[in-house]
Every structure is written in C-alpha cells, then in structure tokens.
Image (cartoon, rainbow, N blue to C red; front, side):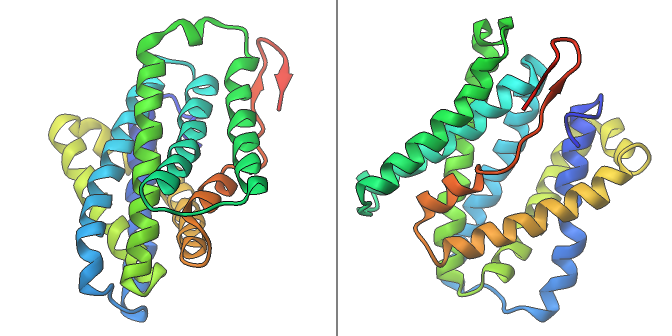
Amino acid sequence: MVKSTSDKVVSMTAITLGHAPLALLAMPFVPTPAPESWPLLAASVCVHTLYQLGLMSAYRLGDFTQVYPIARGSGPAIVMVFSVLVLGVTFVSQQLWAVGLIVAGIFCLALLRQSDGLHNPKAVGAALLTGCCIAGYSLLDGLGARAAGTAVGYIAWMTTLNALTFSLIIGTFNRPALKAVFTEGRKVLIIGGSGSLLAYVLVVWAMTQAPIALVTALRECESRRQNDHRNGWVI
C-alpha cells in the first residue's frame, strides 16, 4: 500500500497512526505490561520511530524494489549475529543455514532488477540503516514482550506511543502530510494500519515462544509480488 501511493510520507504516517485505534480498543481487555518491560518498550518506541523515518528517507532516495529488500534482508542477519555473540543463543547448523538462505533470497530481489539503484550509495546506506532499526526493534520487542508477560498488551502500548510520537514529528515538520492522512490516506490508515498491527502482534507473540532470530527470519518468508510494467517482470 505504501508503494502504490505517490506520497510516501502520507502513506507511512497513515500506516503508523492506523496502529492506534485497534491498540487502544485492546488495552482495557489485556494485561498492562509489567514494569520491568517499560524501559525496553520506551527504547522500542524510539527505534520504531527511527525506522519509519529511515524507511521514508530510503524510499525518497532509491527505488522501492531495491530499497525494501535491502532493509528487510539485513535485519534478520543482524539479529542472528547479535543473538549468538551477545545473547549467547545457540543454534543448530540447520537453523543457521535456513536463516542464511532466507537472507540471501531477500537480497536477490534487490539484485534482480538491472537498474542503477545499487549504484546509489545514499539509498543503500539509508536502507542498511533501516535494516539496523528493524534488528533493533525486533530484539527490543521480543525481549520486552517476554518481560511484560503479555505480547498483546506490550504491543498495544508500544504502537500507541509510537503513533503519538510519530504524529508529533510529522505534525511539526510536515503538517500538510499529517492533514492529508485523513483526506487522501484514509484507506491506508484503516486497512494498512490494522493489518500491520495484527500481523506484528502475531510476530511478537511468536518471539515469546521461539528464538527471536528465527522468528525475525521467518517473518520475511512471505509471498512477495512485485510488478514492473516497464521491465515486465513479476515475483
């Protein structure tokens, strides 16, 4: 939905604000996150905000079909390395190979298209920075949900605070884009925001049941269809 819109700032803002309605509705019915999870939650809000700003910057600098795979592919690789070196998580060889193949497959999407996108160091840099943010919030949310004792409650609070923070930033620096969310971006706000929230709740719940690195990699194993009518290829 972000790719289909002409103004990526409006669509990204709509997606982010669209998390809040369902999150607010869920809060009275789910446990409040345990106090020990709040530092992780606060850090996650900051990293999510950086991720959203970084992704908008990457979209502005480079082509979507190359920027997005670089951003999404680098995240699982970073989480795996961090899990092994810092968290001390042990993986069997099949798991390491599986994550490596997933990451390689995602990066192949960026290499498939023969354009000058890979020669744009600013776009690649922004995409890699975004990938670091994906790794950061994945680790923070996985550990935070475990500490919170409730994946749904944790995400409800985190996404609401993230929506508030992001709207304040956009409202300060690009007020027309914030206003356009409620005129041009209503479909993205409602459908995209709700779908994104529900999907991420499932991801974070899975992180409370399995190693964060494996869930982060499996999150990227989705059916991707990308069309370029100019070059005539479909994935």
